[in-house]
Image (cartoon, rainbow, N blue to C red; front, top):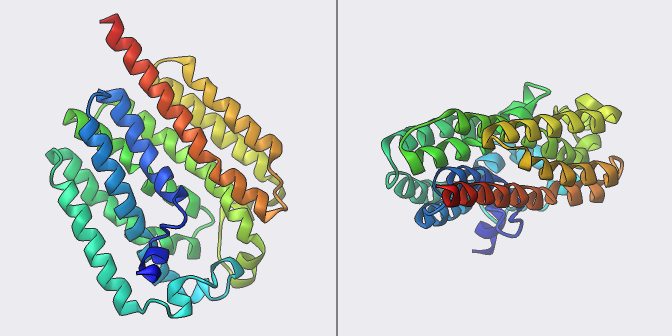
Length: 275
């Protein structure tokens, strides 16, 4: 069971938060009273993030064995066999499917579509310098599914949220990728951290600026500029040459996402009071 928990990264909940928060943003803006959806998305985020980690490790077992940070992963150490990993994956996908079919038809369709990104994302670092963009496409589907679950349809707001999330992911995952820049160069793995190199801060600043602007458009208010304060603090303190600093400021994006969630709730409550 410990091996399964480590395979799902239950000891590292930051990934679950980053998958969950865009969905919560959408629900908060669309219908903040849907506590059932907030709960379902929380459970779904744990399950699907776990499934995504299993898929990632099945694809990357050989690569993980060549990177210092990932040497202790269960498939590399043998704590979990590939057969056991596939069994766990099947169980997680079944739970995710049960949650998905409780949602409206459009949300179900979007959830099924998202699986194409979940399965193929781990391969992207082999073929493109922009795997962080594909992670953005994958991790932010919750914004579309959340809006569809709350309203039964999509709107411009959901699309703006999705776009904002993609740029947010480009920023924080570029920071994250700086942990492995040297190892990735040795084994030929591509990333925006390697592509941007010493210009990464400038690029991340651009991604965060785009994310903030799109959030303001989605919410139709400049209140979302409060998120820019957190992003500015990250860029000011982040040391690109220090893996510990990269991990710290990558993780701090949970707090940035919660700030955005709080702003979504404030906006919805204000609009409700005005009516």
